[in-house]
Amino acid sequence: MDSLISAAGRALAAGDALSALQRVALRDDPPALALRGIAMAQLGEHARARELLRRAARGFGAHEAMARARCVVAEAEVALAMRDFSGSPRALEAAMHTLAARGDRPNACQARLIAARRLMLLGRLGEASAMLAQPEGPPLPPLLQAVAALLSAELALRGLRPDDALHALRHAEEAARQAGVGALQAEVCETRAVLDRPAARCVVDGALQALRLHEVAALMASGDLVIDACRHEVRMGELVVSLVRRPILFTLLRALAEAWPGDVDRDALIARAFRMREADETHRARLRVQMGRLRALLAPFGGIQATNRGFALHPLSGSKVTVLLPPVEGEQGELLALLADGVPWSTSALAQATGASQRTVQRALAELEAAGRVRATGQTRSRRWLSPPLSGFTTILLLPAALPSG
Image (cartoon, rainbow, N blue to C red; front, side, top):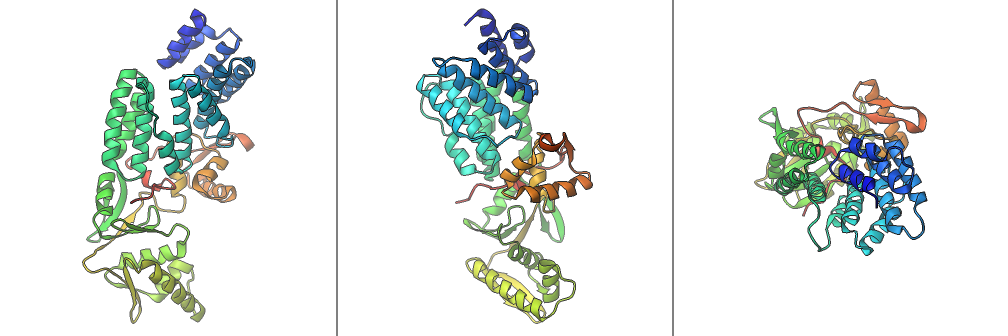
């Protein structure tokens, strides 16, 4: 490896993309193309970076498997920055194994971190945690230690484990300081700020009260009956039942919980759950069926009793009922939470992350655009969606596919 390539590589490792480009900007050999691609990625020119990395990978010969694998890893990182999840993860996995087998542990670790972050963005948090587990070996460079600790902190935040998140962030902060990369230090500070921002709301003595993440975690562990409108779950201590795929049942349960210890009128329940202004006997029969299903699901938590005018929620003896409300109400909460990271997302990537159809996502984005809450850039296949920063609170609880508890 010649001196210019070595110097450019050191500059990129320190986050100095412009210095790296000054050394290799006029060269078209594969190593120079790869470094130019990485530099362009650091500068935010992702489409150009991907093109250069692909040219570099094609330029390396059959005996340069390690160099080609490094190009694959770099291109996967660019795709992640572009929120492009259309590619198969098999190429990245093969590159990771090639690098590990040839003793390039830092780049193999980088591939593992990219794969773990991809899984996390898609909401597959259990798989992301398993991917993040590092094999035994020599200490990693501070830069990779910081990235790994930051990813661990994000997974802990999604799993409502603020103490674990704080521990990981302290490690990330120290490693980022040692690495001396300003952008990484800023990312650690921004993630740490999530711990101090309101993450949800609840009603206390008839008034809305903002809760930070550690307060939400304490509420979840309190043993009270918590109706979680952020994740559409009902929880009492370690016992959790998801109603994500039962929206009518969750709507009924939330209405009963908000009225607790009182009851809710049958017509009010019908209007809220079925969106009917005027109820007839068919709607009341439908309500009885749904209430029967809700009773069966709530049996471990308490019961639902019929009253003269409607229904009332009765938790197990000694338990209080708390409704945990999201910081942003509406069906578009997951989309706003994903777009809050400031990175442009395509509709296909948003559909993959939320588990909804692409057409459903397009309709929701059109409504949000009409309300001025998101904006689009580009046209047709290159169209991407952005959201202005949501200051004052965090949308961490609205992100899809939270880690299971217990």
